[in-house]
Length: 438
Image (tube, rainbow, N blue to C red; front, side, top):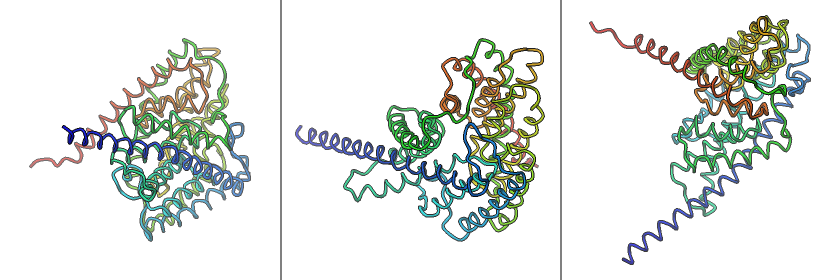
């Protein structure tokens, strides 16, 4: 009887120590990851100032540098990052992605720092790729480092499940610190990385993302990332999203497949030294005429949101297609980066294009609402993460409660269409790869 009670007390004490260790790690990592997000934001601003003499804001999302400077900026940026990534991938210990880190592989500290900063440099010079991967990878690396360090402080060792939770939560917190979007950071951890909804997962990831957001807000404030109108989403928006979502759902699935193909077949050896600069030069040529293509997609998305007439229809069509093509080529030929914000840009352009078309027979249509609905539906389809997509658009646009119904309906339709599309694609791939019996 006494032995049983002793074991029970011992187990309870051990669990308490583990919970204390997890709590301390959550708070400290929230602060550290928040500071890393600040550092990456400042680095982006510095690179934009040096290469483009420009500071990206919601009010001025499109680079204002001359056409020739835009061409030179992204071309030189491509040359620089190609050399760095070649040496990182071939002359040192290769970097490790977040998913492999969750499986226990060690993320080398120095290489990860260089890799993350290189991503920011390329986006800052105008490379067509998302910058949200950098803070996520930095967060995951910092979590791994803390887990190794905490044993020297006399803290209790964490379980494998809690180690994975801290790494995933830190990755989400990195996003939250950059975009001031804590719920999105939590959902990235729970919905995309861990794929498991539990009270423990939500509490740890949301707390860490909240702290990182507060740290990031020290220099960024609590301003929306995209500027939208103040009109409420009316009953008409329900009809609009039913029209928009099937197109963006299919396009989102297609964008996902092509990006995965590009990443799987990414150039890593010596050809990156000329192929990535060539893609950078191509990006610069496009940017010479269409500066909206530069960067992570904010310029294109904001242009789509600000659209009020059919005068920019062909601009949105051209840049929307070019943004998708150049982003895929950028990944295929060696660049690392995110696809969330490019997906938002492409979706916003599609939504605005459909809205412009409908406005010819539907007067007084609010086109910016079409752009927002296009962005959220394509994002949910491309990431296969409906809740993260919804709350990301809500948080970074500061939308009001009236958007919930049209957004929920649109995301549902987009998810159904995209999953059917992906299912058919996977079936075709399997049929091609299965050997035909003699």
